[in-house]
Amino acid sequence: MKLNTKFKKIVTEYTSKFYTILTDEPYDEDNAYWIAKDYTGVCMIRDYYVDLSDMVLVVDNEIEGIHYIDWYWTFVATDDDKQQYVNLRSYAMNKGYKIK
Image: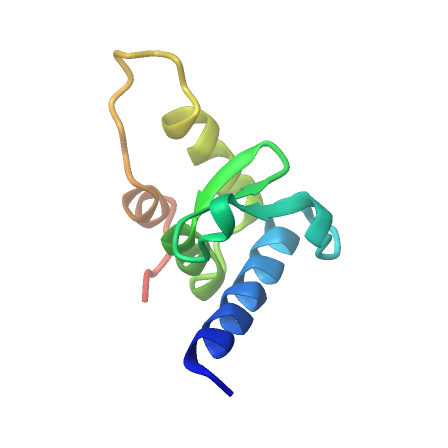
């Protein structure tokens, strides 16, 4: 198996697990789209734009979907220019997650 094929398979596994964490539903590949088919970039899952590193962080550290959603709408999707940005890793650590 080519390395690229293995990589896409692993990314798809992360996407599937993240999707289930985020939506509390089984993975639906019709609602998960990698922009420009770039599996190292950003995936649109329903109303969320998620990069691979955040997916890995959520899945590997078993961060609850509600915490990801709260972080996303507070720090990523906000229109408030005055809002201070907090990255997902710091946010999760503040919520008590032991980040690996």
